[in-house]
Amino acid sequence: MESGRTVTVFGAYGHTGRFVVAELLDRGFVPVLSGRDADRLRTLAALRPGLDVRPASVDDPASLDRALAGAAAVINCAGPFAATGAPVIEAALRAGIPYVDVAAEIEANADTFAAFGDRARAAGTVVVPAMAFYGGLGDLLATAAMGDWTSADEAHVAYGLSSWHPTAGTLAAGKVSRERRDGRHVRYTGGRLEYHDDAFSVLEWSFPAPMGARPVIGEFTMADVVTIPSHLAVPEVRTYMAVDAAQDLSAPDASAPAAVDGRGRSAQTFLVDVVVRSGDAERRAVATGQDIYAVTAPLAVEAVDRILTGRTRTTGVASAGEIFDARDFLRALSAHISVEVNP
Image (tube, rainbow, N blue to C red):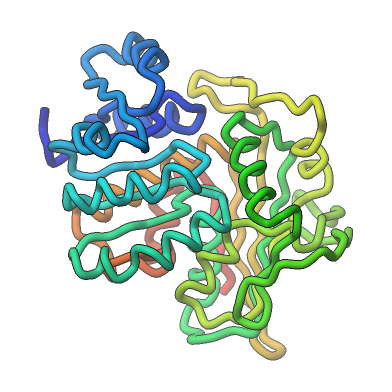
């Protein structure tokens, strides 16, 4: 096994984990299959002959050390990340290897920045949280849109999803986040996270063609409120969700994504519209593609590839827009998403 191309995937058998394993193989990496459920790992291994299987549990540090032994990096795909993030990061620090996760949990991502920044920097390694559709993509788009601006008054990230069939992991993570917030909502305003009990509002967002104007839930807050202000001087960050997609997510009979192509992607499409404003000036970046879970895989794997080949700008805990060249990173995803940045 070529250690320089070996990447442990914790939570490899999950919905997103399977996409990540496939993307690693497509790009010439050697995934190590890891996670808490040994039976599910063996089932996945039967479909991927020759891959190493290493069961591990977050409450057993020795098992995590075995899972990461000889790996060049680890990608954590196992939520809720409030439970898995810190133990797997600790194991990565012990192993001296980079850590990337796909967490969409606001509090878990904030915890990562707060708890591991100094330690990862001192170790000369990198920890990249939220390297996923939520958190990572919005941050890359906002960073690209900012261009030569050193600050902006506000950033807005609007999600136009054709539907949102949540995975079991999404539902579990949402439950944990709601419990941590005591049922309150969260927003980023005045340069900090603020918890509140205000009701959601519905407004109209003018998405670029072909989507056009559609109703969105204002302050449907996603991980972008952690990643964007972690490195960009923007005191107001707002995220919005298409009403239809939000209703899909909250439906009592919400169903998981169903594959419609050979890559296992669902029929869901998305348009992410990012607007940054400074005074009367406005800049925009837009991404379109198919399946929010599937597109997380090339985001995470591209991140690992850039880290391992030295195409990074900092060490420690860093979001996608800070550690990578945002425009170049987005261009590298052209096989998976279409991106326009104006100017």
